[in-house]
Amino acid sequence: MAATPLVDLHDVTKRYGDGPLVLDRVSLAAAPGDFLSLIGPSGCGKSTLLRLIAGLSPVTGGTLRVDGRTPEQAAAELAFVFQEPTLLPWLTVAQNVGLPQKLRGIPPALRSATCQRVLDLVRLGDRTQAYPRQLSGGQKMRVSIARALSLSPKLLLLDEPFGALDEMTREHLNEELLAIRHAQAWTAFFVTHSVAEAVFLSNRIVVMAATPGRIHTEVPVTLAYPRTSATRLSREYHDLVGEVSRLLRTVESAAA
Amino acid sequence: MMSKRVLHILLPALMGVLFIAIWYAIRFAMAEEMRFLLPTPGEIIATFQTNGADLLRAALNTGEGALLGFVLAIAVSSLLALTLSVSPLVRVSLYPYLMMLQMIPVIIFAPILILWVGPGLKSVVIITFLICFFPLVVNTTQGLVSTDRNLVELFRMYRARRPQEILLLRVPAALPYFFTGLRIAATLAPIGALVGDYTAGSSAGDGGGLGFQAIIYSSQAKYPALFATAAVTCVLGFVFVAVVLGLSWLALHHWHDSYERADN
Image 1 (tube, rainbow over the protein chains, first blue to last red):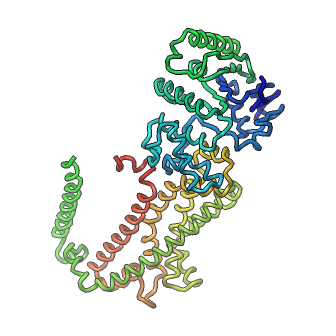
Image 2: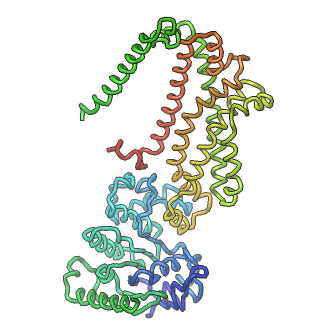
């Protein structure tokens, strides 16, 4: 890789207190523009890895650099999309999206233009005054993504954001996510249980193994961007889904 | 559905008529010389002509004591709940004493209170405060510490400062709990003021409240007036609850699930 890595993990280990090893010597580098999916059986530490990169939890051993700094120092460069939409129910869509800017002390007049722009990106520009409970599950998740994009992050960390949605909505949002990335060019770490989703979105898939969590294999995805619903019909796509599924089965049977 | 709405008004009205009919039936079943024990609704309403001014003045006095004690309890309990929510250690050390405060029997405390601050409004306010305080502090504290963990994590993620986390997240998230406490306290406030009035009220100054008035009517054997006093107390309690329900609706209806059906 020619570019300096945006995320650089070297022999990162993690354990909580005196508990068992959750992550064992994970080394991984992501270049700017990478869309990297983490996939693996439950307990492989993929969500933990994401939380370490986000600075939500400290590493036990090894080094972790985001944009050349510690995750805490690089906090302004990264945004996190949780499994749940995590919207504040008493705020409108626009106020929810404006929250990260508000916390950073950006005055309201400057916030609204950004809110409108990111909500247009997720095609909810006309629902700014709605409350979360008036939205569908997919719409809530789109608001959550708009909120994450509101601070123009270099790195987007997504922890199974579409796991609770139905298949159709998920495929739709996958396409939208790629379209937005096409316009904004952030780097993504994407945790998922869905092989199809990982193949469709990523240029790199990291297959992880459990107990202790570690990297098993990395699979490059050579499908050309931009990817559309037609991509899912291609031979190459199906071969990749098959290959990653096979790897996952290997990992899971080794654990059992 | 129109017929359903009509039913919702008609059925309670019918029950009211039935209730009054039973009332009269019981009264006429009683021996003539015992009938003074159960005045008719007409007699009770009639007492407002002679005692209306007294009852209004008493209701305003009790209302004042109830309102001051209620507001004082809201202010102090909110501040205390904020303090309690900040640290589990503070919570553990203060909780037993809060429980004790709740256990104070007002009847025994009233004479002590009269020694300390004298009879009248001050005593009534303090007794109301004591009765309202506990449900408020328990509910508000519970609300402040029950914030959705994912939302707390979101705030940490965006490096929110502690005051931001409290003001923008914990306080609004605690509002449904706060209003639950407020509804309980709103029903207790007029009763607390009445009990305060009864045990530590005074005819000095502007002439005491409903509790004090009840003592007077009782000693004069004015039973219809006693019933009227009870009715006025009910109205006072209803006003408190109605105001709190209104405030609760204003604060929560646009986002909280408890109002979901009303919106659709």
